[in-house]
Image (cartoon, rainbow, N blue to C red; front, top):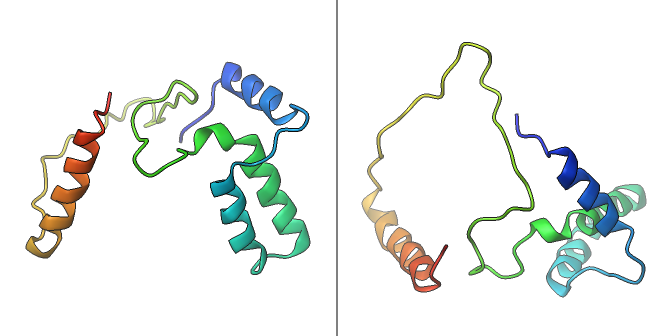
Length: 111
């Protein structure tokens, strides 16, 4: 199970309390699209969540890469080791889309 470290939790709580800071337009649009299917209490919870975690969402589809905002550790138990698996073949009808996505990320020079 992934966990936020204490430092990141403190930073997230400080960020969420900054006065006058609203949601980015993409997160506001996401919230607006969800509100029609949620109760008022649920919509308020989603708005609080998006506001608290707004730095964790990439602002654009092509801004992908590494982040130092969240560190995670997967607990596999005291004696269990992760299973290493080989690469899987990509289905032919999906290969063109996969190549398009990979080339797009490579062109954006992922770090």
